[in-house]
Length: 256
Image (tube, rainbow, N blue to C red; front, side, top):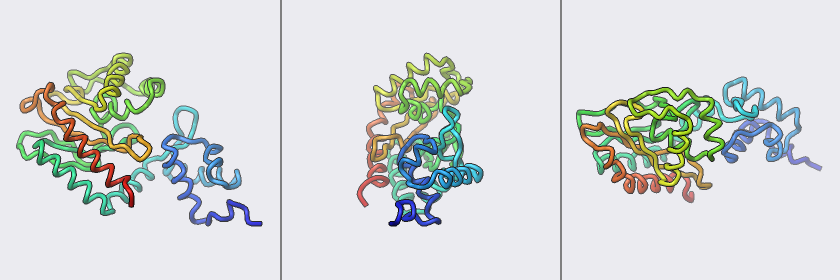
């Protein structure tokens, strides 16, 4: 009789482990991975150790569970960029930037902040440069606070305990309890904002791009200088950003 684990080719086993983590959407212990991937315990431990040593997995600070590390994220984003999806997604971003005439960004969560995967600049000469590949803090950016808002209150509080809530701009929220209240307001609103919290003279708004399980896959964010846009008017962008996010969701997670 052929055991289930014998059906997984040797050269596919690491890919199956990474796929299991991707589908779970949260850090997993080796035992939890073993509940999905039917391999002998010594084999699982050896594969996970190798992936950790090579920089594809990293231990979570809480509980020591495994989650994707830098090399896995670079691999995932590189494959995505190499696909036709990137072209279609960029066209959505270009259309949005042309519509609102301000800089628009496609952002994902990184190791210690939000990473800019794509950007279409405003045509105005006065602009703030946030280059592709740049990583910005979670606690004081629109996309970062959006990411934190997708965690429940307890998980968000534990993560904030590990962060240095430094003042990056004149309105950065540096008190944990105040920031938790802000995240609650963002959950209710369905979008996030930055009122000169990351950078003096810059405001921003971000909306979620959700995967098929309604988890945060990415964010679409737009920013502008306060000389051109009042913070009170930023919410006017939200419906157009949400339409763009819906278009990207269909591209990324719609039927093949």
